Image (tube, rainbow, N blue to C red; front, side, top):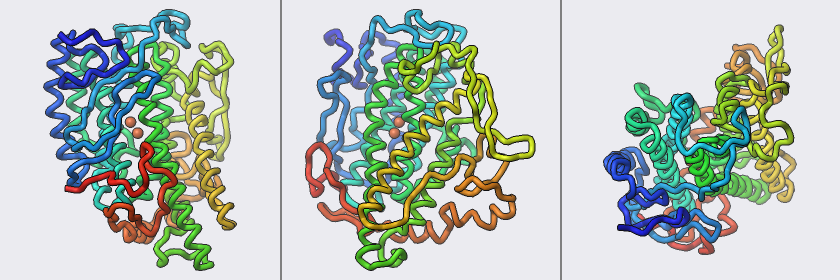
Length: 478
Ligand SMILES: [Fe+2]
Ligand SMILES: [Fe+2]
């Protein structure tokens, strides 16, 4: 019999690597082992399309402080997807809501079963969706370094699916197992059974979209996981805590990806002393701005409406907290607090209205996200400034291009000026990627699969992966 797991080190002797002592629960182990071939089948049919022999990937081995990953060349279908929960804090107490101060839950309370299952399914649905959205990008990777990062993000999103499926199998019985099957049957962009959330049915057709997606949309994931990490349901909290560790790399890929695109554009602008770099092999700043506008606005929609009684109930019940709940200086119950949320006035003007703090929690989270996003724009503008270029990038107004919430009913410019529907139709190509922009960006997407080489529209990275140089053999193609 395998040694009792200390909860920190992953057991790789088993079919499904895990740190949850899976071998002690034969029923659960068998159920997950019978889901495993379905997952692998999904990976083969909906995962990356570029054939590879092996990829230099990190694999989680330990959830503790002393290092958690190991790097090596692996054949992707043999990647050891596993189940890893952050270490248990035996003294952990519920941090908010009506159960504040009570011990956290190791099991799902009957009265919250449906809500918790729903939260887990929605989170779980986004993970394989992004793999599906990105599946064809390998064919046009700008370098082997970028190709490796794409695949790293893909295998880890696959592992995040495992994380949610483990919870469904372990805690939600037959219904949970059925939901786990459904997570493999819905597909991004499918007409019959699309993914649950809008942004996860959009295409990721080129690498500029990929960097914007990993910057803006993976960052939404960071904030959602941050609220679930606060959950009174301890296994959910511990799962999300570990997922956040992996998520940090995905956002690094996005942040530095956009850095490098901007950097290259600045270089070409200076070299040729022109703003018009289309035709010179770089991506013009106005096109970068349009891609930013698109990905930011669809990601804002992921936070839901400005007000939500469901989310108020989740909070009061202890299912889902706020971003960095324990750093908030209030009573963590919010029963008598209020918040100003975005709203349309009776005349249809963009403004604010006061609601109870509980009902306005989506707005609270969206604002945390927005201020985080400003950090990226700041660093990209520093690259422009240091390059001696006068143009700047910016986040569009919160009412721009929204399909969810108060501003779904109106159209607005990136500066927040209201527009008629007609004018919007006529002018949206000034602010969102138009066909001509997409066609141009796609024309640049020629694969560079030789070691140490890079496409002309993007600067090389400052650092390689795990201390390796840029010209390391990160990927061996088949
Ligand atoms: Fe994820
Ligand atoms: Fe991610």
